[in-house]
Length: 536
Picture 1 (cartoon, rainbow, N blue to C red):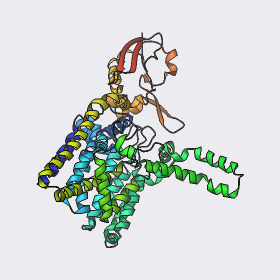
Picture 2 (cartoon, helix red, strand yellow):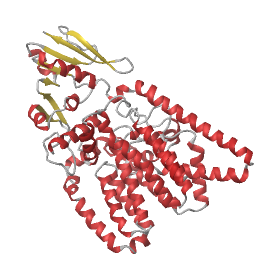
Picture 3 (cartoon, rainbow, N blue to C red):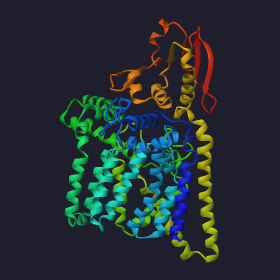
Picture 4 (spheres, rainbow, N blue to C red):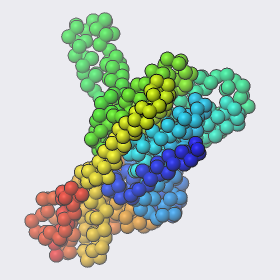
């Protein structure tokens, strides 16, 4: 019976993640296209978009230096399904599905209880947070799976000692998949080693082999992590580049007469620490988790939190019973949760559902633990005739929550936030490519960001043709700015001097007076995204 229930949960999780995977969200956003095109380039030529041969430490991409994990994971699906939306998102979908399965086995290993394990896998199978990130090409989702698998295998290694090698490899894969996991993976592995210190001491042989494998596997990253490029992304989003605490510190010290004690109590490091702690605890706020979610429309549906309101009482009950029973498992889950938020707290935008994603499935296990104890209490305290009524009420409330989320996700969210997913680029590229031979020059605005990667992706440029036809340069921040791709120019500076037949793609209302409007590209809210015009 338990196997049947698990199969049902896996089937439910699959249907929630794979249905209209290529159509919802409505379009591929920049990073998805970049991941997909670089995977396609590797699959067809073993070179990335910049011509580098099989990069191991990172992919240059836009100049944001993406970890290589997701790109290599997308190669098989692109070879199988072709270069399209479904293929690019498939690794994330598969990771989300496997996370449901591994949550079952991990929870069973943790509590030795099939019922809690089944409830945990069910909770994450229907979770808005887990579904949202399984339906787009998010590196963080694949890293979260590797992170969970690493923790699970670590627990298994207490019984089967050699499994510690597979656990370490899984953590290394998470390290190579998402930047935040370069901090989370070593800290979590170290914490588990301390919690289960006795098992580590009794497993010297395989632990030593694991350390050697780690040192070898991490070798490609040593020089990169010390380079200027590895710090670019962190510097771009880090709160520690904010000069406000320094200015406040200096002002307060000056006001207090530049005394020695003023320099201590108004030290800028204290202000930075306060700022960091605020950002850290933002990731655990009830507003974020249960009412509003992430303010970035790509990371949440905007009409509810990362969890259903239905989940809140069971989360609180689960925490209560874990504390009351003094479960050792509470240490594993709580330390995991605390570590997962460490890198996310350095970002300027918090809470951040993406950067904290490797916290999954800790919340879901706590919710399931609470639900388990509620059901257990009902069996003991409620008359048998009333149990069915109470259970029906719980199922009804859950069904209402799920229906609301799915209706919003597939109907309203897909339409209302299609612009956040860069809807319109595919349609624009399709039109421009179909008429490109008719024009001497084509100008495409870069006002909406990185149009070149959409032409490379949807026109399926080979690595050789892309390298041959592009003109690019790096800006002050280190990002690559592609000026042109063949006859298509993404810089309007030469437009006034250009002659012959010209096609232009610009933002609405920004066409030169001597151009004739041919086509309007709209998003799903019927808002204009691009205007396409010609001058003959």
